[in-house]
Image (cartoon, rainbow, N blue to C red):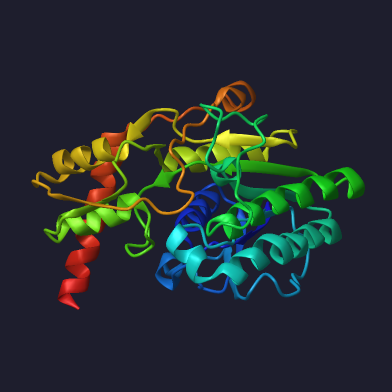
Length: 315
């Protein structure tokens, strides 16, 4: 297939690019590097089936020739990023989704939207299944991301229902692995950088709040399977194994072999108290569930962060 992938220079996007190329597909990545990194796509340049367009997807997208699939992954995706770029986050969820759906309509291509578990907000249902409508503060600091993705889902369904576009929606839960941006503010890269630098780990709140962490290779496999399923409603992809942030810090200590100290700070506004996907639908539709356990995933991620720090030190 010939696939257009927005946000392909980001963490998940670059892993998805590599996966698709390995499957023999042609990939056109569109990214403006607002949060993506050029080094994430450099290994693909000159490989034959890869093309890159440096562009803001909130602007009109023009692609020549046939397109089989459009994957819309462009967006700031961590609190530190969407608080830094609130307007851009809203625009890529709204105008970016409009433009990529328009491209799908013009090219008669299938479409997949990368949505997020953040559409559930600070959930009152646990674990979160796709039928839960969420508990979101639209005017809070996280609202720019939460509502942009909720709007993107609504727009995707509107194009499916009104224009008969063949669409998919994946709700991505916390994902980790190599190529995470060290300064993106999410808990795993932050913990790794603090731990490997010998700094105290920063925990917001009591540390009893929970998350569920899926290793990136498992997520990519689930996304690929969803691409080929005739199903148009949201599907959760994530690891249903729930862990507290405090316990995560202890696991990092085990993986790196370093003793840690913890500094506790005030919990940010609207920070979810819990996050755990119900993946019953993914199991049923895709025969999918994650296979990489947390500690093994953390070990692989630790290798990448150590290599990153060594490279930065040598430079």
